[in-house]
Length: 449
Figure 1 (cartoon, rainbow, N blue to C red):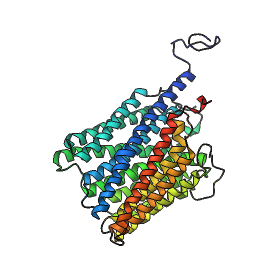
Figure 2: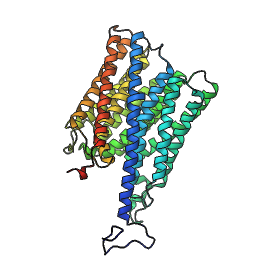
Figure 3: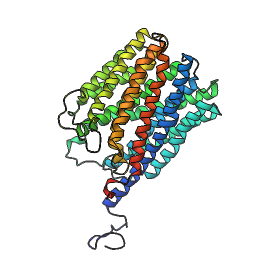
Figure 4: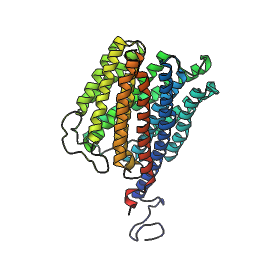
C-alpha cells in the first residue's frame, strides 16, 4: 500500500481523483450523515412542538369541554410541527439518502443537502414559535414559509439533477413508461410537496399582510391539511410500501395500475375538498384506500416469509393494522359528512389517518430502515419497537373512540378519559424516539466486536 491507500498495482487516475469505489463510499457516508441530521431534527419536532403541544391542547379541550376555547394558532402550530417538522424532515432525509442509490454519474450533493437541513429545520421551528407565542408573527410566519420553500427547492433541484445514468440504448426499459409505479407515485407526491409549500408561502404572506392573528381561516386550514396528508404523506407511504413491503414483509409484488388509480383518486379527493364537495370527496378517498390495499396485497397471505432480523416479529402485523386505520379514517369521514355537529367525527377521522396510518407506518417502517440509513446500524431494542407501536395504536384507539362521544355530547364522562389517550400516545412517541436515539448511539454493525 502507498500513501494514497491504494495497492502497488493500483494507480490514481490521471486527474488525481480517487477511484470510483472510494467516491461511492464517501457519498454513502455523506448521505448517512445528512439523513441522521434530518432524523434527529424530526424526532425533536415529534416530541416537543408536535406531541407535547398536542397533549397540552387536548388537556385544555378536555377541561373546558369544548374545542372553541383553544387557540386556532396553537392547533395549527401543532399540526405544522407534526406534518412538516417531523414527517417532512424524515421525507427529506430519506430522499437525500436515496440519491446515492441511483447510480448517477453526479457526486452526492453534500452542500445542497446540508444547506437544505440548515434552512428546513429553523423554518419549521419559526412556524411553530410564531404560532404558539404570537411574537413577531407577521415576520416569523412568512420567513418560516420562505426558509422551508428554499430548502425544498434545493432538495428538488438535487433530485432532478441526480438522475440515474442512462442505460444502454438497446435496453427498452429506458422509456418513461417503464418507470415503476411506486417511483411515479413518489415523484408525483414530491411535486405535490413543492406545490403545497408554494401554496403555504402565499398563504403566510397574505396572512401577515391582512390577518389579525397567526392562524389561517378554519376551512382553508382544513383544506391545507387534506392537501398535505392526502397529497404528500399518504401517497409517499404508498410508494415506499410498494418498494419495500415485498422485500421486508414478504408481500406479493404490487399492482402498478391499481396503485396509480389509488393515487389518482387521492388527487381527485383533494380537488373535491377544495371545491367543498365533501360527500363526493369522502367517497373518492374511501375508493383510494380500497385500491391501495388491493394494489399492495396488504391483507393477503404473504408470498414469502418476512425478514425479521433485528426487528420485532409483529412487524408485518403492524403494517396491516396501519391500513385498518386508513380504512377507518375514510369511514369516519363519511360519517362526519352526514352527522358531525361539533367536530368530534372530523377530529376522529383526522386522528385515525395521521396517527393510526401515517405515524403507525412511520413507527413500523422507520424502525426497520432508518438504522441502516443512518450508518448501517442495528435497531437498539426490538422490545421498544413493539411497545412503541402497541402504545401508539392503543392511544389512537382511545382517541378515535372517545373523541366523537365527548365532542358530540353522547357520553359526558368521555371528556375525563380523553387525556389518557394523549398520555398513552406521548409514551409511544417517547419510546420510539428513545429507540432511535439508542440506535444512533451504538456503533455501526460492522464495527461491533
